[in-house]
Amino acid sequence: MYLHLGGDMLIKKDKVVAIIDLEIASEGKGNNRFLSNIKDNNKIIYISEPGKEKSLIITTENYFLSPISSTTLFKRSLFAIDE
Image (tube, one colour):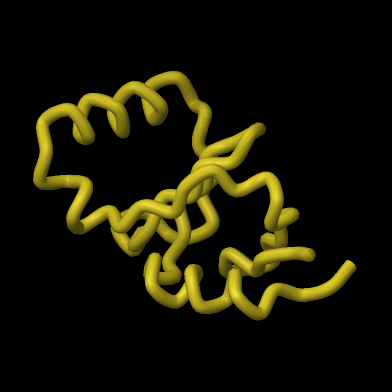
């Protein structure tokens, strides 16, 4: 099963570790340090334009910043695209 993250990005659903709402995550100092760390180390794949990110998707291999809300991604994960 695949999950559409936005743009042309599909990932295998079983690779998803977490889907994080960036608005809520930005409220904590620890979360901000984590986000800064992965941004500084160029570990993020940007699906959206800078400033339009709504969610962070953590997979077993990468980090993705998506313009799609975490709620919408969760709903999509329930009805993921078959292989």
